[in-house]
Amino acid sequence: MSKPLTLIRPLVQGLHAYVPGEQPKIKGLIKLNTNENPYPPSPKVLAAVRAAVDSRLRRYPNPTAANLRAQLAKLHGCRPENILVGNGSDEVLALAGRAFVEPMPKAKHDSPRAVMQYFTPSYSLYPVLAEIHGAAKNAVLLNPDFSLPSVAELKRDKEWNFQAALTFITTPNAPGGRGYPTAELEKICRAQKGVVVLDEAYVDFAKENALKLALTHPNVLVARTFSKAYSLCFQRVGYCVGAAGLIAALDKIRDSYNVNGLGQIAAEATLGDLKYYQANFKKIIATREWLDRELTQLGFRVLPSQANFILVRPPRLPAAEWLAKLRAKKILVRWFSASEVSDYLRITIGTPAEAAALIKAVRVIARSS
Image: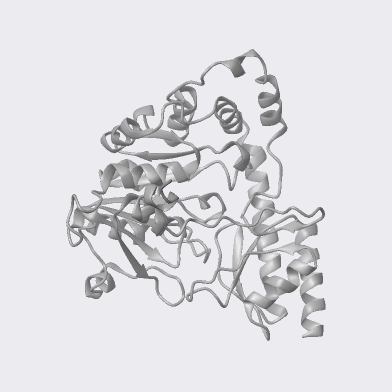
């Protein structure tokens, strides 16, 4: 019998898979590690999902999420042809790689058509998508404060590729949390020859959004999700907005029936009760600001955030030790080993009670360290 590895593509053998945040198996943990919304879906959404658990479960869902696309088009002032719905925004990001980037060796390594580009530190899925696709990765450092380089700075940077087939920009950024002005993003989009995906997973907690760039520039897509702000992580529904030609290309290669029917119904009901979620956004932002002040007073360096999380540099002990000590007190936060952020912890904004429990635990750890 042949060895199993001989059956697996070398590309897959060497792949470093995306590592999701820990899912707790111990009861009573305060989960502040995966940027989920601490508040439940709207009662109207829950009622709509319950009502849909009937004989429809034996049938396939609408293959194009037509009703949801129509509602999103009305919300964003565009046409359904400008919207593609995905199995979470992660599917949209993966489809962009498959649609716009030539894998090697079809394209030479130094060919712009083979390049998938992104800033770093940023969403750790981007390099994984490039590796899965067999594309050339081009990771370019953000400024030390995690702000975006200007176009003039990028022109001086030998690493940046203005001809890249696909460029991802997370805005607000993760894991840093910094929001980027639309005017800055537009300059980069205008200068870029390939497709630019503005990943707005956290935009509902930010001061502004860049949706207009997707509706006015032929090479720009804006990706969004119902997970972070709209409490639907479990259902996996995301979408992107852009020029009809780009959307049509993505639609050609997506999986059939890629978005489950209950997810479509939940997302449609969500759009019908936006006031409920907007009230939750305000509560999350208020808790974020309170947590920023409290941690700053305790000696943490808290980076400015426009997301539903904060990135903090803890005092006295290494961040990895703080991670372990907080977990021992049944509080989960996130630590990344990448050198640019290994001194930091990322903390999801929970309820006020969860934030207070975190501060209480931090005070105890600080006194004993």
